[in-house]
Amino acid sequence: MTQMSFNGEQPIAPARFRLVRWREGYAVEDVDALVAKIEAGTATSSEIQNARFTPVRIRPGYAMGEVDRYLSNVEAELRAAGR
Image 1 (cartoon, rainbow, N blue to C red):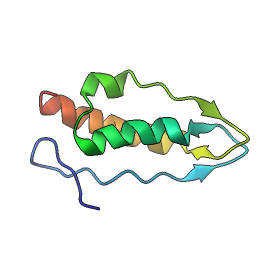
Image 2: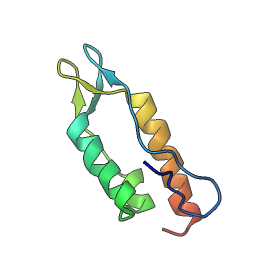
Image 3: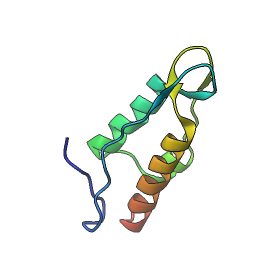
Image 4: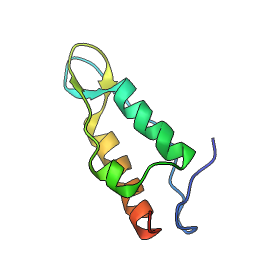
């Protein structure tokens, strides 16, 4: 997978998140849907900023901190690029 860059300067690594179980995480399908839009280049900074994910505990979910950090970086890149 190639690295993405929205402003031509610093590339953003492809999304890879650790799965957690028996503690709160984000629903995999919710996060994957937004990441697909990011990777397709169709997500906007406001869409990322306003994203909400279903919390899960028993079934596997993505580690919240990892997802939040990734989306914060992508949102900042999009905002800097005027998107």
